Image (spheres, rainbow, N blue to C red):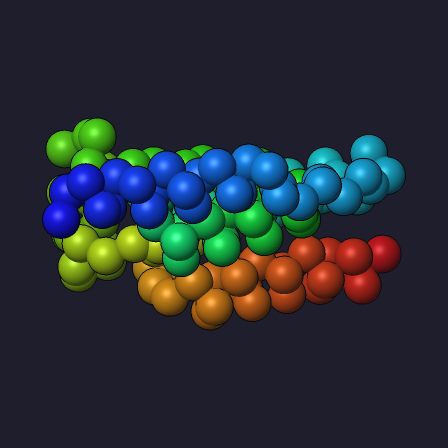
Length: 126
């Protein structure tokens, strides 16, 4: 089973590398506003997880500087994910907004929709 996972994971990463989306180019002022909004975002993810790849593709396409964390490689991030989000499941987007309590968002489709809506909201406001 481990061999099959390794083969599939390698295939997913290779196809993602080949068909990687282009980042959108924006006006520097608009990009700075988006960067500021994304400063409080952290994505807990695994490199070869297809659902995580889906979210990372949205992040790249929208040109978002979101911190990526692999909970398998760091015990502190693993504990933070379990303590904050309640379960060890990826992808998980941690949303920190100033003094408010952090919001933990699971499910790749929900995360992707949220990120796209935040970019659209900033773009619409200008």
